[in-house]
Amino acid sequence: MATLNTYLNFNGNTEEAFNFYKSVFGGDFAVLQRFKDSPGCEGMAVGDQEKIMHVALPIGGNVLMGTDITDPMPASTFGTGISLSVDAGSEEEANTLFNNLSAGGKVTMALEKMFWGALFGMATDKFGIQWMVNYDYNKK
Image 1: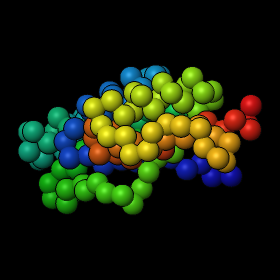
Image 2: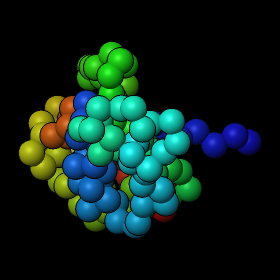
Image 3: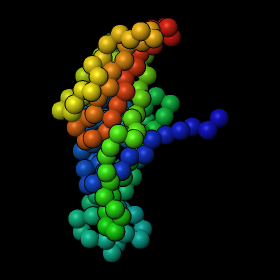
């Protein structure tokens, strides 16, 4: 079956955001490319050349990827249309992930035991990305 990965667009702070995600999830970047190192980008504004063209952080069997928006692309906007859902392998991991992802952001639903047999919570991180953290007690 196909693999579904997430690709995030940021307005110039992709590197900061992905260093944050790396601190939360661990691991190393599989790819980190700047526009200045890519063919065809020589004519870009100097400030844009330093921005991230592509970054990839493997997490479990998936990859979280991202880029910086540059001119003439429209700025990225954040809203309530999408949340990234993380399935933790343990209650301890769920607590750690939730606390780290919500640091400097906003908890929208505290991480608590739910009637459907899971530990679940929702937060928006300090970069405006919405996260759902889940640990299914029935999956042990």
